[in-house]
Length: 238
Ligand code: 5RP
Image 1 (cartoon, rainbow, N blue to C red):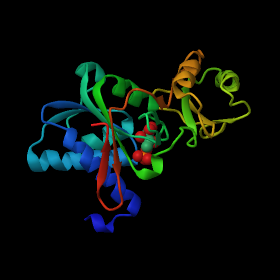
Image 2 (cartoon, rainbow, N blue to C red; image 1 turned 120 degrees about the horizontal axis):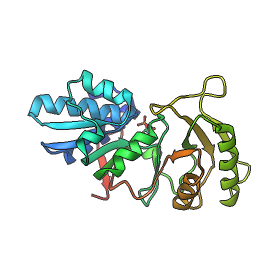
Image 3 (cartoon, protein in one colour; image 1 turned 90 degrees about the vertical axis):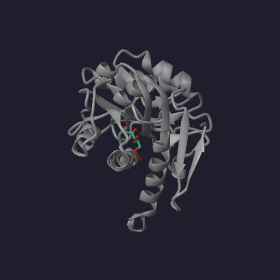
């Protein structure tokens, strides 16, 4: 019953439903993380039951793994699957070049590894996430716990080189309740406002030894699906 849903959920559901048109039986499918991906996993399970669609899922987080397995979706690991036909995942921001900020849900590392091991990545979004320049959403950067404060200082130095000196670098959850990711790391959220050169920032941050990965996804998204409150969806890049 879609009329009971909030406008935001109607848009998320519309994006998820449209993205599932890219799924074919026999595929190995990367299952993203977040509230939009949650819709995709629910609708996928429904289609598997109703239409006999057969896929093997590779989840990008313990949260998605728990949801998918509770819904009866057969799962594998990335190593066992080797390579994926398609990954469907959400995003926190996207721009006109199909570059993304991800990691608002704390799963950017597995999400990026899975997306990079997929023939195609279909991103499920809504209009609120479309931006001219990435960076209004704080950029998540996954860092190892050892020496994370020093890593944060090195991150600040890289930001200076990018004309982003003085921007806030915040440990997610704060020092007393720091978030620990599925891979046992912390996340620094970089409050940047606008990122002049996302590819270069991603490369430079990844050169810092304590940085594991950034939430900048450049050159990974093949298709963006923008769901709308009226239940329609726009597809970019198919
Ligand atoms: C999780 C993510 C999510 O895809 C991103 O945060 C979007 O989530 P939502 O669909 O809930 O807005 O990157 O790490």
